[in-house]
Image 1 (cartoon, rainbow, N blue to C red):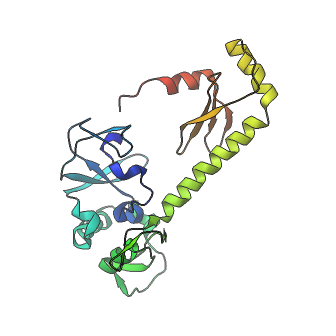
Image 2 (cartoon, rainbow, N blue to C red):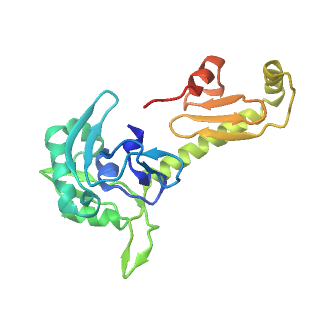
Image 3 (cartoon, helix red, strand yellow):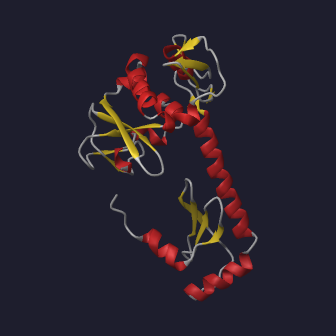
Length: 240
């Protein structure tokens, strides 16, 4: 599914209102492998106007509708998708519904524009009250209008990943002698000069030692050297 996600993934300033405020993903329905992401390193599906909007949980995916890119720029295009989600699967939107709110002055259209400009607000949609996610007001101003700002969720995610990397580096640095023994037993070469590179960063962080191939992991719960069986599993090519 990854190659059908947004090509804007590597742009922290891309502020997707439907994703940030409803957890709504969109999948590009173009031909497989017909395009590239903005880093030019990851194959993506081909471009096209058709997008499949979907709500996901740990166990299911709920398809909402096929729409075009206007859903990102125009509130009148985004609103029907939000209403579909709220009317059919309110359980999947619980994290975004503001509890114990009895009234709000802002409409969905108001909230859409405010969020694009970097402001959070409570708004009403179909008799329910929702709170837009926080943003960092860093969008460029042109002709008196501010471009879309970076989502606070993006900043939080980036900080979490950087903190995980830092903790993992600190862990490796504190166990140089022990890890040198492990490296020697695996490679026959003893080294104390560890050169680390990030090979995966997300919910789970992997750092690899360039000279020995030792791989270290931080899952959020476990921090340490990756076992041989896990290392071999990671090395397998993926077909998804």
